[in-house]
Image (cartoon, rainbow, N blue to C red; front, top):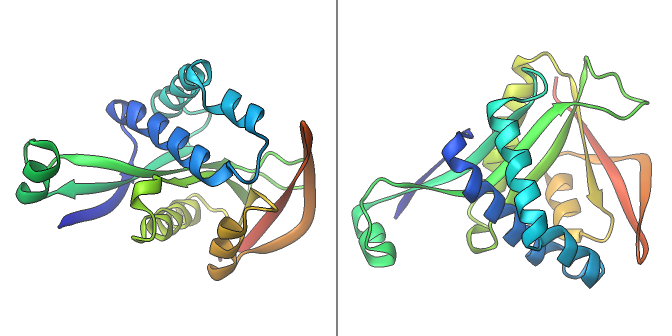
Length: 194
């Protein structure tokens, strides 16, 4: 049995954040993105870039309104010993969420935030980590004075679209087409958090 929670990311979390991102992308996007671009986004060279970017997000975020949160599981003694031969009470990063002021030209960054990333490690899905990350994100955004939040998702990523829809998010008519061997459509979802 493990305790779960969400907290601000720390510098020592960066390797786990990077690894979680790579595993989550490989699992979630293998049916959405062409193989070669996905490999480029998750290969060794990309991992180094993501590591540097996550470290910067923790130690020198662009503004005080940018945050990186992590979902963690705190292992009890039996789980820790059985699975890892380790000490009890160690926290394992199992998900991440990042956010900041919206950057799309049609949005007001004073009142609209963007959920930049929401990922859960494939081995830890369906345990409420995504919902906890989303709720913690919204709490921080309200404290920072935001009234609306947007996020971009792949239109074909039905699991993610359904997850956000179940939390009250809906398409706001904006979309993008990424040129990755063939056009990959993204839609922008939005929700009011007042």
